[in-house]
Image 1 (cartoon, rainbow, N blue to C red):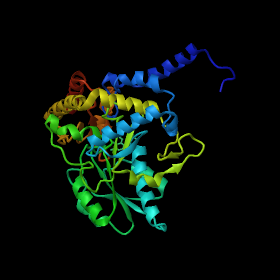
Image 2: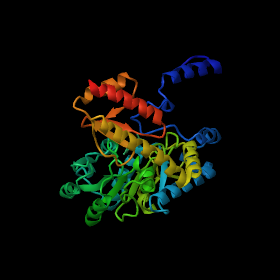
Image 3: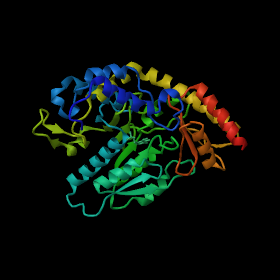
Image 4: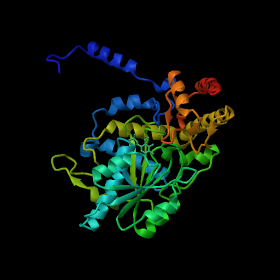
Length: 385
Ligand SMILES: Cc1ncc(COP(=O)(O)O)c(C=O)c1O
């Protein structure tokens, strides 16, 4: 650290130089990210709430009320207005919190967990479950996928054993946007008295609106009896700024086991993994939910799905093998997919690939029709080679 602080203009110049090196969503060339330009209201909200801390919520009662109301709105979107939960840093922390809850509940019932407890997740599950299992001393067991890339529920059933602690279903998988059969997974959970978590980090702001924009949906939320908790990320399709992840539990009893006393704080108890937590993230999530409402989210998704549909048909027309998209994630393949990926990168496109090696595009709100046409022209040239 410098002995003497710099002038503000000097610091700002350094920051601007650093920012110039960043890619910008607005440019429309980022086609592999699940985040996007946040709603502009966030800038004003961050200014108003920048010092607030949800880790000591008794000091910030107004901001805490906004968190409760945000969770109520998210719960209503997910079929349970009485859900309880928190705004955390993102999907990773939300998934970790869910497995923490599952483990805490079991620990409180049976004190003698000697062997590693197992969590059965689909092969399509996000890598955050590996991190969570490592931190919590759990073992991940991966269930096979069907040819449509949803989890094979019979394989989950086969893998359930006396060491199983929890099941995970994915509603909007990271790579393909597919939705698992949560109803069938819930039946297995209820039959075997297992905790069930649904990862809808991406799909949570998509699936509830799919039918409104003319697509097929699938039940995935608290309306299914066995679902104990759901991850839903406002900083993905929820248009809120980073960091905003949602973890929702069916009822308060599920979080009681995570209660920690925080004696030196004004608020004497905490339930979250993070201590100090951004109240600005909470307030801007609230503001965006209120400003957009259901109609705003439907409008947003409609644009994304129209563009996804357009790209799907055009890319198919160029001779690529294309998977019919469930949501605004488009996956296609080519015999020389590595070459196609390299050429797209050379041309300035930021695309990603799946573990199987397909090319993956996420059609977020920052992708425009003009950029989509430009991409198609580049793909056409590439496909000729
Ligand atoms: C389904 C799913 N779950 C969890 C995560 C992790 O979210 P985050 O990167 O916000 O921690 C992602 C990220 O893309 C995801 O797609």
